Image (cartoon, rainbow over all chains, first blue to last red; front, side, top):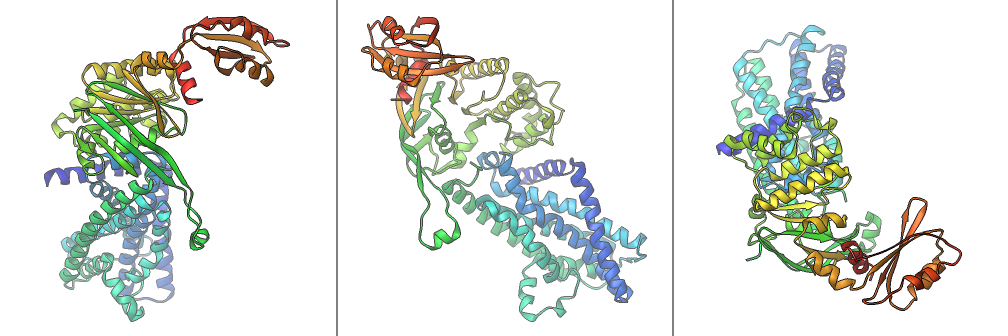
Length: 258
Length: 325
């Protein structure tokens, strides 16, 4: 268990290092979430939203940044590994493939966590949205769990790219639907009822609810618990599926570009 | 027990078709990259797989290191079937390939090694010491904290070798490791490989470079079109294929007619034209005991003839004869 934890932590650290060393990527990561946040705050303000709605939007927009940073890059990251010739080396390593890939997507969610903080600060200092967090510790815990959950959801997207070279498009395709379905910007109650079960199986729905609950001072432990359970389920499914997909990629020669 | 046992190994690739063609029931084309290859490699041996582009060398290696599943046949590395026990094989083999790819450019050389040391389960306490040893071995001490994106091709290749050796593999697979590196770098690489074999590592090497194979390999298998054409020591191969001498004639402007006439001469087995700058060199392989030089020169009417050299056959001659048969 210690070995697994060490592998995940070290792989996460190196992947974070790789991702943090491009000035251009860094600039995009800094500016991109602020555009999102500005658009959302202006829309809510134009709609004469009250303080509670603005706070809810600020929290939603901040988690949206984490999801966007993860979803768009998770699926394409393995294609990038394939292009630079490292995917074969990752598969040829004796460590379990899922334990190598999860830290990779977790590093993306960690980069996305910056946008969470930036959005809240942007809202506070540029738009004057004061977020009074009723339960700071629970708020921090809920953010931590949500970042892990989004990293794990990204992991599910990423493993599909091991077998299917074009699966990188999946992340781009799912980015915006998840904004809506998980209630980042609008309450779930305004969505058609047939979409609710889809929202319930997406961990960010519960993670976001737990963050909002902690900010507003209402009980959010059930949501947090559901977020954790779904994250564990994603991990187990991802570990199982990644084994199949690697075998399939070995059978169909999809690990390398040539 | 042999360290590597390959029996009737085959691998077929299917080219993909567009969705519409697939819906219309049209299947992709099958390409047989490896066709019933069998060979063994003994402990401590340096075994070479020699062949032209597309011969099936890399496909064979990729099956042995568990990156590809064989279509049929069996392959065992250190007693473990590569299909049934891939993780056992991965723990004990190293893989190094040539070229620029396979490294994280944004990380330093040392960070690349630290990352792979973790993935290849090098014990945490040993990692720094092992990395220092390998940096010393490949001559990258002092440059290890620089980002890989600033490394030359030779430095990258040396870092690849260090990466492949991190977990002290019992068998090392080197897939065209000297491709694209300068002569000094290539010589250093050969010294490193020899040193590894002296220390007991079993090495399977693929290369295009005949002198490299001749200098390094204990045994060589020549592979072309997915099949093994010959297998033996470099000396065996030279003896087995070309038993006569070789005449090299430097000419300026040799026509296909001349080549045809030389080929038709009695006692001539092979004729290859090599471009060397402004000149061409006609490399003529003769049968044992045949004296073909005067006859070859008499065919050169109209062409300006330069140097004429008669020599013993090299591994390259044997190789050319085998793959062009």
